[in-house]
Length: 121
Length: 107
Image (cartoon, rainbow over all chains, first blue to last red):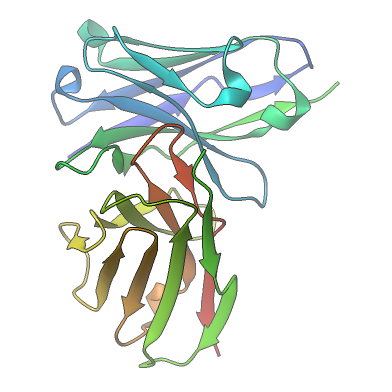
């Protein structure tokens, strides 16, 4: 059974830093692109970042470029999101998602339960 | 960036009704269009990928169609467990973008 479990969320002050983690099991982690997707309270879904299977290619939404860093440790079946210089508008539930393609680009076929990040003073 | 719109933003329907949700992209996304279902407090679930391909385990009352800029998600016979918010998502180019969602509830 595919499982993705996020951790690391919490309260952080504007301008502060936080690192999210996602532990995966039930599939060969190193065979898949992975993503972070977020959802502000009461709002819709927003893709944040993707990382290639080997970690060498990373893609970000414009609003987090230069502030967030996606990374992975294939030996530990773990995905990370380093969040620096956070803003109030980064407040959201952050989901870790497995990316599948089937020839149609990045599709999120498995999701974690999410971890809440609240940016507030 | 490709902007995604959905209509309606919400709808109420009865059990057994046919429900149709529309998604439109600001430019062609070919068949790189996917649909998700999200229930309150839960993670989204993939329903349809590549515009019309049913994800494994998803009931056959769900179907998708369309190409280019205009897409449709259809539920042929609404069930109580289908009450949720539905999102479309394009994967044609980054940034990957989602529609604003369509909330479906029971009349």
